[in-house]
Length: 604
Image (cartoon, rainbow, N blue to C red; front, side, top):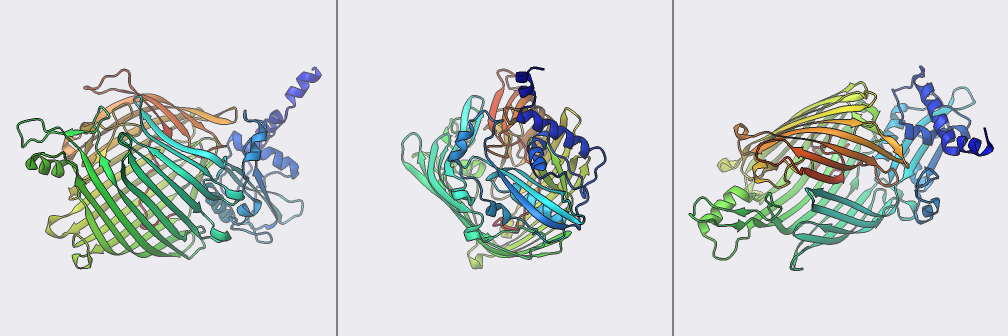
């Protein structure tokens, strides 16, 4: 072998890949962890040089051993495996080691507890500044001791965060958030915001910090102005403010949160052609062609406190006070027939509501998780809660206190998640009822299920089903299918795909990720069935099928970049040219019960 060939063969990346393969072989040759753990080839490649540097291997039985050292490694965003020159790391504020250490739920000198290590990893994965997270026990030369290796990789901090949706050749949504996500390596974030929608654009800014002044307190402030794209006139504004102590540990007992939110702008309903839908009233003999435009206001404020009980089985009791005011007012052209306007309001405009009062919530869940890879993302560890879960929220309201209805609201839900190899099966059912005076009732029943097969060599099969029934609909709200998620290939705003009730079944074959220039790339083949109508019996299910690409850029995000191309297969829709959709995140989220926490600080 020539010296040049030898140098290529012994390149650092090949050495890492070889070490990764060796580690992988050892993992599956019989080494048993405290909990089943598996790493992707990408994670093993990153882990190998650190194990070599510390002259260690993965500890197979760490529980109960004394933690002698904790090694925190914060990786550069770019390395020699990336097409981007390493020089660009100079423009990134890498997370400081102390920022990672303050998230650790274990300390040197304590017995190693795999549950605390796993919980630490879950908390770190929840931080948007990080992509890769590894918390692994490694051998110590002294008997009875173990070392812990904590490795994290930042996403690029000085960045133009973005989200967008392109459907059928039309840009429906674009979000640009130029920001510094990791000010001085502290995980504080400051940035601007630009949101482009079909008829409006928004300009604003935000500031947030998950650990204010080194504490566990979290806070954020956001504000934006809304302008009409065609006239340049201001159409409203919206914003939020939140502050509180989130739940971060199974041993934590108290949490609290405060949230303020306001929205005041114009809303629009769109048709199949992507333009504002024009309503034709049955009560008049001519085509009214009324554009469905309405003024929308929402003011929401809530304070809550949560008391947690137990560790293996957690009960979260939440008490609080909330104000929730929404209002909708149709904007019709001058001279519109009042009868046509009344019909428009009754059929297409949501009904406002004001609720002021206390609430109480209870959530019971197991602190048991499935650790897997390549289910919702590619090449990174993922955690999903297993076992039963129950959620209950009760909230009364009275006109005497300023509410628009006398009501008793109850949300109740149950779910169960079972490990299916390194996949899962999850089923859930929930009911939300607002029983009010004068037959002003609002109610929604939801059934959902997800089956994610074990990895089958080429990938895994994911099937997701949902059924939602608004059997009381005082507030005149509707579901919509079609576009980039539940029924790909169909128009985003088809009136025939809107209604009080909805049903959907989505099946995807998702391939395993492969490394291409340090990006994790995969494919998806999918089949969608969905429909919506104002009565369950009127739901007409439509079908589509297609092919998609999934790419994870660990330097930028934990979410996959998704590009799907789908063909509608039902009568009344042209099969070609089909529809293309480009955005971030999988097409349908993992089903989950809504939390009794209205501020989000007690949601885990």
